[in-house]
Figure 1 (cartoon, rainbow, N blue to C red):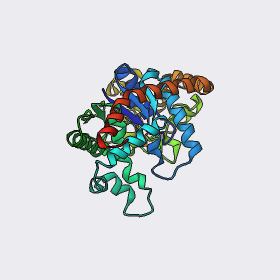
Figure 2 (figure 1 turned 45 degrees about the vertical axis):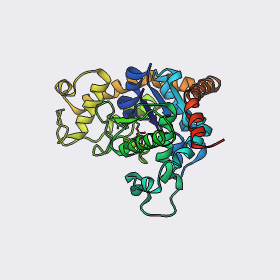
Figure 3 (figure 1 turned 60 degrees about the horizontal axis):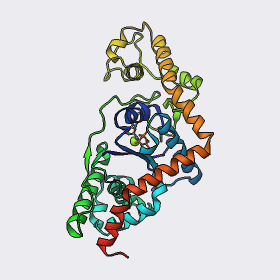
Figure 4 (figure 1 turned 60 degrees about the vertical axis):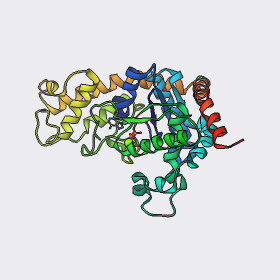
Length: 320
Ligand code: ATP
Ligand code: MG
């Protein structure tokens, strides 16, 4: 079983949908687990009300995209279980191991004023994985070291106190096009980017999507051609159009005589791809009772899935 998370660090965007959410719904919906990692969004300065609303919105977007409700949960709904398991794993992890994490070193920059949770969150991440008994964790390069830590802690706990945890391994996420920022094709589209001019959000109105795509940065040529390295802006539009239509970007290039025509077609394809997701997400968000019911059920299932591991781990390590 695979476990994937999405941190509600901003509104979900087109790249999240085409590169992850849509594929989660198609490939692993029946088998795998997905969670909204809202606790991970508290390791740097955050706004509580905004975080709460982004977590709800992201949950609604995953359900609206077709991931079965019973495969999704919100991390903070398991705060008690994860808090307890994090403590057990912190007592299994050394300070040196945590301090070695490259991401911590990069983000902390040697400053004492960073939150302690920035240092310890890879242990919480290990708890996320080990509580659910996930055997595979699809992660990018930047999270690989954290999954290695989870792996080391599972092994160490099992051999020191007794077999409790499935030893997880990192697997490469599904390969696919990386959607680039429309205003700056040198960087990828991201939900936490401050300037959102080049970011299409799942909940953007069609007119706003059209405007953002019309203003996408291209180059000084005028006829579309697919050259990702030399012409990243146009290649990005072709890749987005390809991802929305199931065609190949290279084939699409020859079908549009002008940049304007390509932008027009891309905008319409994106609007139509996102329309059902936006409509269902909005509908769910206007029905807080239904969303709360889904959320509660997901949390109950996730807690139940991990209950025996948590209680065995506590017993074996000498608690209670
Ligand atoms: P942040 O700015 O907080 O890092 P993000 O938009 O990069 O946000 P992540 O939470 O890092 O999103 O990633 C969630 C999932 O979306 C991951 O599976 C990641 O590979 C995928 N993803 C993120 N951005 C893109 C993109 N531009 N194109 C394709 N896939 C993407
Ligand atoms: Mg990211």
